Image 1 (spheres, helix red, strand yellow):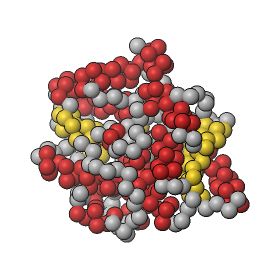
Image 2 (cartoon, protein in one colour):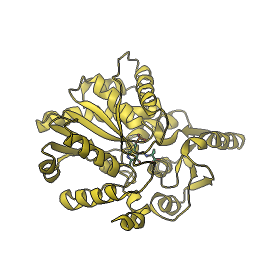
Image 3 (cartoon, helix red, strand yellow):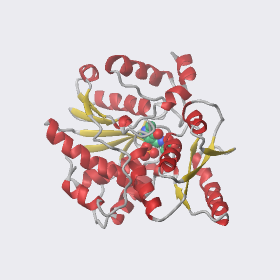
Image 4 (cartoon, protein in one colour):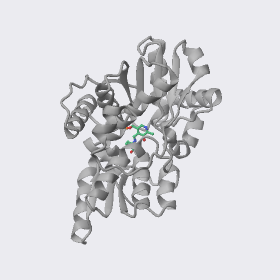
Length: 329
Ligand SMILES: Cc1ncc(COP(=O)(O)O)c(CNC2(C(=O)O)CC2)c1O
């Protein structure tokens, strides 16, 4: 861990959910195809509830909830939400209750199947996008307070200054790993939904004065005003840490293929290519689109000679959208 990051974060309550450093793995076949060295940080293996990148944010979010004596966690997302499922699972593992405020078609697949299998309370609403769920979640919190509960509200994706600390810490972890590996990166690339992961990487990379550029791949406009949102999240997290830093403008490229959650042939084919050539499974909503963007940008020379992809997980999405993906290829 980078000493400055470690000491800055030590004052924040954190529950340990990521029990190891996730490996950084070289992808020989992808690298040969691109003529660029591509590595992947296996944050799909953070190890709690196949929750991928969300687990890092939840260490601080649930640490805060426990420190405040809260007894019920509420969060929002689509019915296929990786974040919603692992938030509720982690809350339950800490003895807290959880209520998921969701939208979308209820199908017993992927994360929604896991929600039900784990006996998680879900409330599904007829809205078009996650952002419309926030006022509903606030009403649920009020209902719980009136029932004598002490709810802790977590925004979609855990995209808050506290949640952002999770990827500040990840940047510090990457720093110590590259010294052991003897590698350098020109770019670090991550899928962007609610923006918290990118914001944390941006702030963490600024704190450690990292040589790499941080690049986000927007997977379909999960939120509006993404650049400003990411920058503000990073600055608010810096303020929370007691830092005054100048965070660079986020570099975000749109590879949403027209809409968040839209399943497309190009991504299904890429998932097959990366799976059969490197044994790594990407998902059709987030990491498949992000890796598609990485490969196209790398071929254009936008990412330099050595690139680190943050594999943020999303595995349940393969089982939510598997049939739809197969129809495209
Ligand atoms: C596998 C995977 N990879 C990357 C991301 C994007 O992370 P951010 O939300 O921090 O930008 C998600 C998000 N998922 C959301 C969810 O509800 O699951 C927040 C949208 C993700 O699940």
